[in-house]
Structures are given as structure tokens and as C-alpha cells.
Image (cartoon, rainbow, N blue to C red; front, side):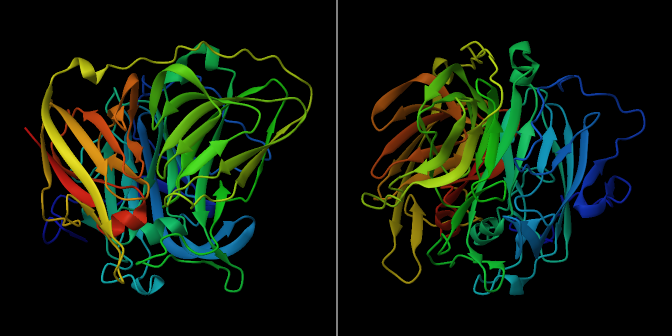
Length: 500
């Protein structure tokens, strides 16, 4: 096990896990809490139920008594995609991976086993087959054995992550995926991703108690029906495999049952490696509750929601009169003007049965601290450029491609930082920074008046976004990057260090 920190990772938490983890048939993991452990008081005692019906859901792995012990085995193996068997790079033989359910104050002990091989990824360079794990959006330390994305896990090795969620960790939607530089796009395109839900928040409010919940994980890959394997992207492009399709929980256009008048709470994850998804339910709105694990102050009615790759949305949806409504990815010019995709059906909302009269919860959701009330102590300018004229396209931040040995930006603990992201290209990008969410305060020259907190923001061609970031609790180094993984793998990433 290597790291770009140099040599053997002395900080690796290499503990045998056989006494902690019991693996059942089909790769399921059961929680084995230690003797004398007590329930986590930050977990809701009676949370709103997740709906279990004909709609496919990933397997759930849930913490108990403050601990979730689990394993994720990464392998090129047979998996079920849309009801058929294909070979792909996945976790736990599952496309997508299992959903992890934890609470503020929990400890997540996760053994990552790398059963990939360099030969699984021909043409992907010296790092082919290496992997690691990033818990996207988690407010935890960037140092080992927590969310250290500089780990390089060789084939055949296991790394034991040990995440300690603070008691004030925000409830909501998060996720996990590989963050091995040059390998992230191909591994995630194959299916190495899964949802994380931190319970609490609205789960504790009585007006949400009887609103059923669903998880909708949107992924994208191409299926080769001749070899029954997924089609890998080219490391130098196209970054989206030819013939790619969108899947929801591993299915093409699954049906979502709902009754007329029923309200459902959906956690929507765009876990595609490269694609913006412009969501729409024609004829009826989404009622937005949260972005990227951050509640909005007031419920927002939206008829379209642009969800960039890696972003999440939590919404309420009401069943219409009997009939079908398509959940679609509406046309969007991701690669610049004229590149709009045709509308794509992601799922079908099917309203049937006897009507019900559920009341919409109050519009007030949660109000967080407005970071604009604090003085800015440091400023950062991040400029995106690219050069796609050569055989290998290159993507730059401030004129540089990623170098893990270089510190590109420095922040001081507990000092407010203002970041300005300038996209000088003709295509869409995103900006994501690890370890903490940020507050968007300006988009394209116009102030954002609401408290808009998230961990990933879309940046339009020739556009500028300004946001505020307050590092607290943790020092160490981590990364910021465009979350279009083909861009990240080809240079559009930098390293930031938080110092005392």
C-alpha cells in the first residue's frame, strides 16, 4: 500500500476485521457492535420509513449503537445491470454499491479490499488497478485513516478506513467513490459508487414522520451485449463511453409507484462520472428540501433542477391523478452551445390506487449560519482553462495540471476564505472541494441572496462563481477539482492545505 506522501503509509490503520464483520450470502454485511455499546442519542428513534415495493432499491447497511462495521470489495466481476449479468468494476458485486446509513456521532469502520487488476484497465497507465475511497461531502479529517485521498491501494491489498462523524455533522445525502488520480473516471463509469445517508434533521420532525422515502441513484454506463461487459471510456476521450445510458438504481426506466395525493421524499444522487442531469417531471413540480446534504432555509418549488455530476437533491413529490409522468433528463448543452442531448426518460412515476390527502409540510426547513456575517480573511482565485488540440486533452487550474506533491492553496483554520472560480472555457465545469461545504454568494456577476450551501457547484462556460468556505476542526491537506472525472483525471485538480 503506497501513498504520494512517500513510501509506506505509516498512518494506515491496518487492523484485522474478521472479528468485526460478518458477511452473509450475497455480500451483505451485518453490524457487530462491541459489548456494552449504547444507542447513539443523535440517531432518530423512529425515522420516516423507506418505501419497499416494486421499485428497485440498493441494499442498505445501517449503523447500530454508534458504529457501522462494513466491507467494500472492489472487483471486476459479474453484476446485475437492468436484470442481466454484465462484467464491470463494482463494489460488492452490486451496481450501484450498497447504501450506507449512519448518524451524526457515529463511527464508520470500512475495510476497502482491492481485488482489481491492472489487466482490467488496458491503456490506463502505471496506476491501472490501483484504487482508494473518498466519502464525498463528509465533514471528517483528511488525514489517515479517515478521508485521505492520497492513499494508493495496490491490487490484492486492504485498507481500513475509520471515519468519526462529529455530533454536529449535517444530516442528508452523501456518497462514496474511488479518488485514485487517472483512474477515477474508468472505475466510477463501471459502477464503483454508492449512496450514503446521514440520518437526523427532518427525520426527527413529526410532520415528516409519515412521508415515505426513496433513494434514486442515477448512474451512466454503456453495455456491450456481445461481450456482456460495460464499455470503458478512453483515458484521453471520449470520457463518456459511446452508447452510454442512464440507469436509476441499476435499471433502465424503472417504475416508481405512488398514489394520487401521496407525498414521497426522494433523495436523488447524480453519481454519473461526467454528465449533468437537468431533471424535470413535466406538468408537476419538485419541492426542494436540500442540496448536497445542506437543507435550504425555505422549501423551493422547482420545475427543472440542474444536478451536476456528484451533486444530490432532496425533494418532495406529490402523486398526480391516475396515470404516468416521466422523470426526464431534459436537453442541456453540457459541451457548449449546440450540444444539447435529446430528452431521456430516467424513470416513470406511476400514480394509481385510491387517492389520499397528505398535507405538505411547512415551507420553513432549516436556516444555517450565513457566512456573509463573518469577515473574509483570505481570498483565492481559481481559473479553469483547457487545451484539447493534442492527442491527450489537458485541463488546467491556474495554468497547472495536478501534481500531488505541490500545495496549490493554503487556508488557515477557523478563518473565512473567499474563493472565486473563473471558467475561461466554452464548456461546463463544476467546482468541488473536500472536507466541508461552502456557501455560494455570487453567480455570473449577480449576488445570491439566499443562504445557498452545497459542496459542488456548476460553472457555466465563460462564467464566474464566488463562494465562502470556513475550515474548522481539521487541519491537513486535501483536494479541490472539477467533478467531471474525465477533466479531473486529465489535470483539473489542485491541493489545498489547512494549517493552524
